[in-house]
Length: 398
Image 1: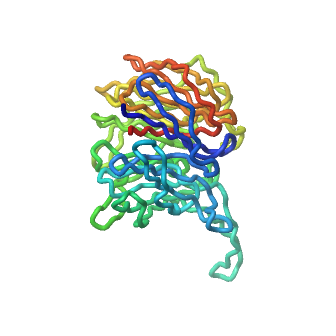
Image 2 (image 1 turned 90 degrees about the vertical axis):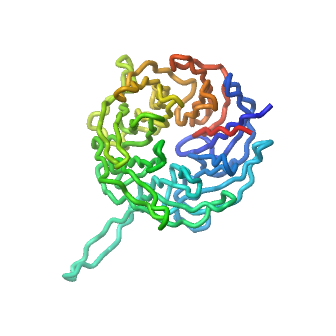
Image 3 (image 1 turned 135 degrees about the horizontal axis):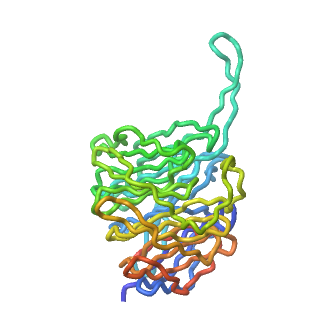
């Protein structure tokens, strides 16, 4: 009988432990077997699997490349998957173009890898002399980029063929741009990048002839200080759904293949009964890590009927289930379920769509599985792994 494996990245941004783990997973029941630790040193976060080549791509979300004394940005790893055991063999390691690579996706042709680089929060002060001879200072920030890598025939990562820089500055918030995701449309004609530093949404396509990234239209300006973070597309209707790190709202858009976004609605991912801490007048750094309400990963069911959104924060770590109206793209909150874990971070739908897992990134760590009912609501299966730093999960069917 074919086995299903869950790869679980581990990240110690503020708490938890780094590394990568694997466990056998029953997609029908959500039962998880004891995990095997594959790595315990690298700051692994988001990952994507090339199922045609049996290759797992995963980012090492750091600011300092170990090949340099300090700095040099993050890295991206490619691992060949053994279909029998799920074990991994590294086949390539490349430098991302700037610090903290945060999201990976494969283009529909399977020939290119997209990397969105979140970048860091630091600035450097340089002394500069002006044209009139006077002296002053210039503030420099790490670049924030979307990278286009060519993939080799065996699935290993090849040349970095193009880079798109996000250059917006926002000194009252996150200092500068922070591209956080790169999600392909169902047609495969373009992908969307949410930039939580610039508070905008950009659409890109690939010029396959010249191997270049091309922007489509003008960036969509989101609500100031909302920090658009992740997004999902409806599988067969022209709707895009975007969550935010700095509020509890998912925005629904209607889109065109020409890159136009039209807002449909905003939906709160928390019921009115949930009381949030007072955020008025407080900036991004006013809360301790894990305290402020922050939306995390988001997925949509294969039929597009339900959205599952992870939110964390003091006393509110949980999953929100929203029903999608296929006629107009509007959203309705139908369930909010607290997690049996702290710092809820990632979510992944299991093959077949009967169960899903949520990863919690705190010191104790938790990987939790949930059964999906016919009406889209969730119930815990009772299966739980203790895995400090659990960040994201990805499924592989042997």
